[in-house]
Length: 237
Image (cartoon, rainbow, N blue to C red; front, side, top):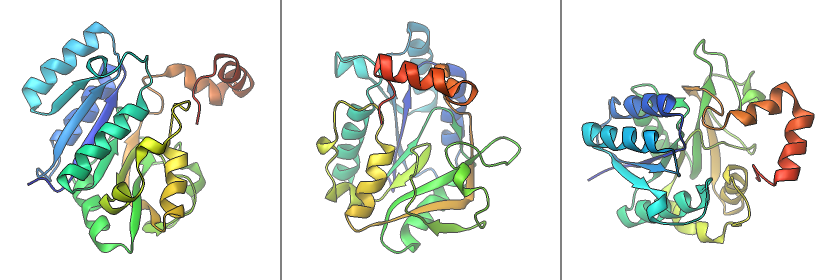
């Protein structure tokens, strides 16, 4: 029986998605179930994912089979994955398609989940390939090399959600008008009496916004980024 359910939402950017999938499937820990959610990617990406699923043996769900709503469909992914995890009675690990984990990342997060006090969420810190911490954990640049409790926001780049938290907070309560939910769910974990942790000693490589390159304007031209965000009502957190 699987000890963990892993999900990876994919929106195009097939090269980074392939790397993410390969790193997961090459993990030292093999006792997990793995589902990739294709969020209305282009035809080429859909076909590549189908071939990868046949080769690697993971579950592939095309969201166009579940909804007519256009991408991003992170809410549907979270709700669907929560029910899968609860039905199996195991934690949920979200690994986004611009993240490369290490061979021992999954096993270390499972260990932390068993050892830490009352965990709600446990996030792996993200870095560049040179090991330097990057977005979204720049606030942790000077933190000690250990797993620490935190009340600051956690991202879903590579984050484990404890089964007790999943059972206590129903993702059907999330606001459907939003696009992203990591900040809100971070707060809900704490408000429901759980402790969130940032694993500084479990680093993963992050290539921010590979599937939505327009978000990089947040750093190169923040005024234009936030103007577009307001006008087009996108990237709502």
